[in-house]
Image 1 (tube, rainbow, N blue to C red):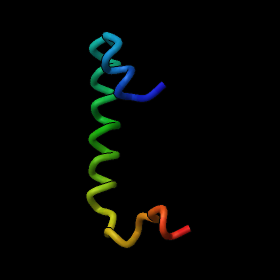
Image 2 (image 1 turned 30 degrees about the vertical axis):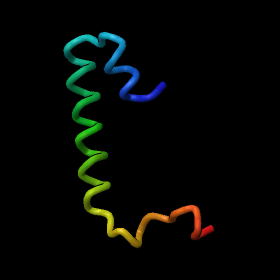
Image 3 (image 1 turned 180 degrees about the horizontal axis):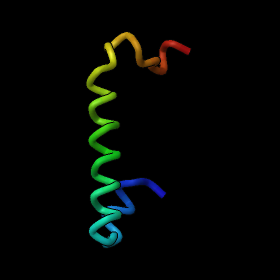
Length: 44
């Protein structure tokens, strides 16, 4: 089950805060990646 699915399934306030914090960490990590760091389909 994805975090977005959990958010849509009416989580409690504590769960919602945890999920949003994790999503924010993931978003920050993705922004820090250089475009060349992510392997695309043509890199296989």
